[in-house]
Image 1 (cartoon, rainbow, N blue to C red):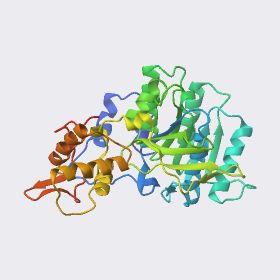
Image 2 (spheres, rainbow, N blue to C red):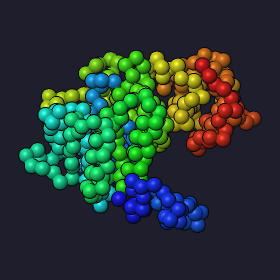
Image 3 (spheres, helix red, strand yellow):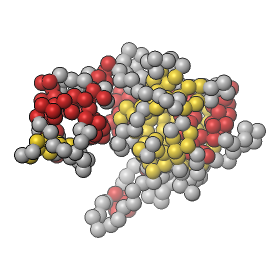
Length: 367
């Protein structure tokens, strides 16, 4: 726990201690602030940093816990597991895993799976992981136990809460949801660690459940979505539902004969109907760059008609096939964004373009 957290842990802020608190919360332009350590990455994309929280979501039986086992195993071993590469700070190598719904027998299987994935022995205790089973407690007691654990356990860098729904009584309660999110922000910040939690998706759609799901989408550093693959229900796909860093390419895993998740090396993501219906102005800069690099195979400027063909080829390649009218609007958007350079010789892709928030919205390439 940071020294500041001791000032008012579990207490109201009163006037006598206000000055101490004020000195901590005031931001100064003349001071240097270190970027929080990046502890979990996927193909170079950061999905977890110290002082923040993230989440995994998916429908029942989508293999969410198998995916989380891989994240924990990577953090425990320092090795790449599936696509996860994790590095905890030297003084924060301990992991706290909290399960709120499974029995001790099932949790024991999860713990052994983590150790096997990490390449560690399963016939002796590992001092770098603590596994708590909270099934028999009510929501208030579970939160109290987590709070006490964080105060008494030292050197924790990663906390897994599987699942967050069981820390509250009403999943649709705005006040309870806000309290839980505030706990996640407070715990991760005060104790200088990362929290990864789990929440189900709605059965009828791909939205996270309840009001807590909305709050998680808004506040979490990363929300991973785990789904059964369209072509093969024995495989599960992992992709970023929401992410602050650049998007990573979706990957898939299947369960091998030892009941361990195994990476599918030749997996290609198939876009869902919902993804295909996304307006082009909602795509990330990385997706636009990907399409433009595919479409514009030569650095030489091209005419207007050929430019539209380049856009058609590039965006179809990443799964966004659109008609001519949409491509015309898209070209205006990209020119105004400086992604495409227009001069007397024609149109060319600006390979140095990295995106600009200020230039977005100047055209509306919907469709």
